[in-house]
Length: 276
Image (cartoon, rainbow, N blue to C red; front, side, top):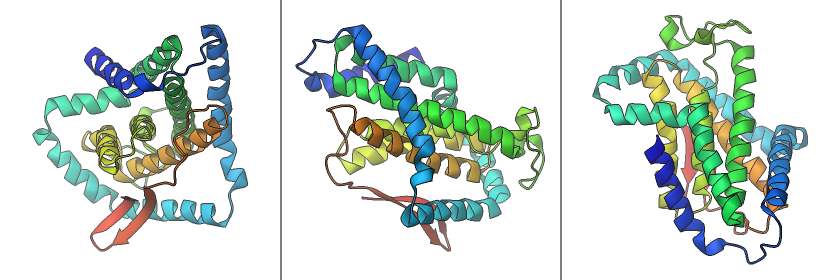
């Protein structure tokens, strides 16, 4: 895991080295207070966005719910398929899926990114760190509350996809949504915002999906748990990123989006599709 963090910091520094702001008059403590405030305010902004949704946003949400429902119909078949693939998955990939999606390792990475930006006074790297930490925190808190309230049985529990025990104090009934997916994909989605090349973005998204899929072949989650977690991750990062646009000079949204997210339904394909 230390190697992953070190590699991540080296790549981050190389990406943002040219973006160090000229104005370094503020102290590190002043930057820290400002950034921590934006982390909490960004989380609040994301949580209150549904109160401001209009027709298009509610239509998108309805599509996500419908898509999750379609995947739900095939959860037991997809779970069996993925679990049968586990023996052929390299151990390194399985370990990566577990480590990157766990809360402790997640905050080691996101915290390292933020503090690197803070101590080098690199605004773009700081902003990225704020986005990573606040998005992971917002998504993480939401999934913890939702898991408990929904109480869906995990595949590994031996129960069916249709069994729900709300507020049951047992990890076997904390399946929906997938926390590993939400933490890992919020990171991937936020990091991908640093790049304009759609193929680089797609590669980062793919890497970010590994922890979620790993939870399916481990029998810890159903496929619909993972799909809904991805959708919530995208919503969370986009919401907080829009808020941070108001607070930092460095922005990722200056240009029109080149990737749009849509639900795709066909006889052989159901899921969230990024169009380049």
